Length: 589
Image (cartoon, rainbow, N blue to C red; front, side, top):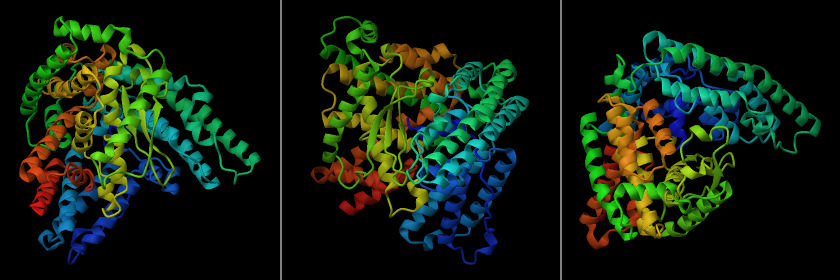
């Protein structure tokens, strides 16, 4: 999972734009496609100053987004204007690349408007917390290179309490309209909020940008800047954090929704139908996705039993799972050992990727880092943090080094391939470097593509020789089973009204996932409906496209050319990815 995915569900549920003047459709005679692209990219950058700052826009460091309903309304008005302008474009007259980009932008705008109609900002937080989760991540990845940067970051800190206040107001709207999170998600967010409130100054992520200031700032001024930052954090931000905790505990928790799934809410079923289509970029219904999941569970289970036999185990499948979950030899003995093993696997993967990719190898490096301790208990096993060449920040493969008895080493190769290379880092970093594509294509985040690629990258580990014994191959299959069970559990919870125990059984009975990981993952699926569907649906499409290409080209099939074709267009909806691959196949025949 990428951190951008998580951000989508913490702060930017229904995220609002700063006001951007967008020309009305009738003013375009004839429709000016390049101007539409320029206006769209200006609109997107203004809407998300956090992302803009991470991409190198230093003026954006001073700002935070406006997440009020009024700003949401302005965003919808702008999207409706873009929709009209796009409809006025004579798409068949555009050059081939422009026509493709036009179709992509039409999909983006249409989906954004459909999402906005559900007013999802009312949920306001997830199992991974509220505004503080995103801001902590940004603090850890921001570097200050000038006095102007420092003043901008101080302005952002001063504005941070507003973001907490808006989250409270949005969540209250959810309470008033009956659009809420369930109790377990509130408890998780509350635990994270308490941890943020209890942080010492030495652990405070919002102060990290001031830890190393440039020599161009005199030492006396550096001290004053740090003092101002500490004063803001210890004063207004600490107060906002306490108020957030009080709100969750005293006001929200008693009114949390009684049903587990989003489908239990009045507007929940149509919202989930939309989320399933949006995240999986598929026309399949939730029931059809559920059946795909069941078929995949049965198929993968057979392969897992084969690897169990290859390991020489004589007991039952359940006994094998219990042994894997409890034998100390499968677990690191220290945080440092776990990070070292993740780093070693990463370097082995780096050594093999040139055999699978030609032009789609990025310049941006990545590092292996631990999950911050204050959030590790509620955090997933691993994640990828975006880097920025403009800001001098490497991509980050983030490994959870807490609860070592829940982090089996036989799963670490699959996790590493998914989050680092050839998974998220390779795919996202090369997309950031595609100068021949417009900015909105480089920055697009299509969950089924991004997460489907991550799961496909785990599969590529077979060709790369990363999995060295039956246990690591079983671990890879266990991870694939995890994603198949997601199809079953996510649709089960949110569409079919399952209990948590019904959803838990698929993971417990068919995968080697540790119990704590299962519980953390289930909470994520409950709080973020539909997102979990993207992984397996996307991976199945990647595999299907590869099979089609191998059959069509025979001995002429070159896996490096195929992977370049997949990645050098940036993230795409799966139907548009298929169009791109089909065009490549025509060019090769």
